[in-house]
Image (cartoon, rainbow, N blue to C red; front, side, top):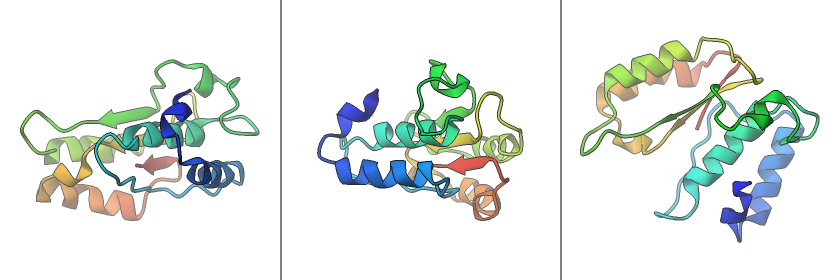
Length: 138
């Protein structure tokens, strides 16, 4: 598991895992930090916790945990030398209302969300403020 890459963040990991265990993960999470600080690793770990269907997440035994590539976890990346555009934001907004296939949630990890243009930010605003029950944004 990628937890090993988060050395020195044991307290943070315990807090997040406790939230997941108590079914108290928020619908939106901002992961901020310096380059190479483990932001993407942490985001993926939170996504796995949110998608796990077992008693204690991550259980390592449910369908969501056993999948190498979970279709319910979507990673959105910035285009080369560009911003994340409104077309991508509209796709995320539409996909957020589709029920998960193998998990309890659909999770969208928006890598470099600060690189979204203004129209994309506005297109996502409503769905992040009032998300579907089974959607999560990181």
